[in-house]
Image (tube, rainbow, N blue to C red; front, side, top):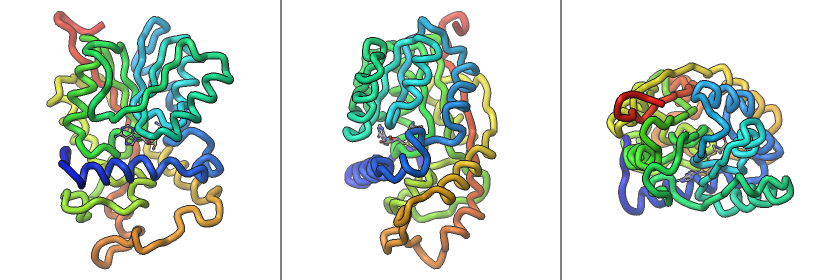
Length: 269
Ligand SMILES: C[S@@+](CC[C@H](N)C(=O)[O-])C[C@H]1O[C@@H](n2cnc3c(N)ncnc32)[C@H](O)[C@@H]1O
């Protein structure tokens, strides 16, 4: 399940963006849309040895919260890329009012076709978003292309720890909107993510399990969701007789951090 083509891919991408544009997310969770929030972002930056002189790309940056927190902490230059015009304009407005415009750039683009030159970045971040992309193989190659030799890739994402036998996982249909909101639409087992990156030329540095953070986030969503948030609709009905509860208990979603590097000739940086 690493590649899709044509119309199915384009409606998949639209769903993966629309799911996160709602202001209801902000009332439920604030501007950070990944398990572990800013604390996990800071931990990942440490694992990836982020340094002040690094030129960083954050893919699928959403409202830009991690871009802001990393640039404030490390003083590095960061480019945030997202496909949502709405989320990017919120991020740009915040950058303008924070006076941090110089080091921060927000670019609209598709993660599968990165609008940057080869070897432009030292570190690529991608939080709770890689799983949402329909063509993971193309994206992994693109990330490798825009990284300098010796550069690092830091991903955190939803992983499948059990069985995930949905129709859409087989690539025969586009998932319902709720599957994007729960980040389960294109999630894979940890080993499958690693395989996709290794095939694109990366080498595994380390992985960490942060599944408890996914559970905490789920509790926060349930406790804080405004009326009407995730309201049931026929579009969210699962194929066959399966309920969402059944799907989750079979799939047993978790959350993992994956750090990979792009080997430099003669070793890593
Ligand atoms: C779960 S949110 C995560 C946002 C941010 N990384 C965070 O942790 O707060 C997923 C993000 O992926 C973006 N996205 C989905 N598909 C994309 C694509 N093909 N290219 C770029 N961004 C995409 C959405 O617009 C959304 O901002």
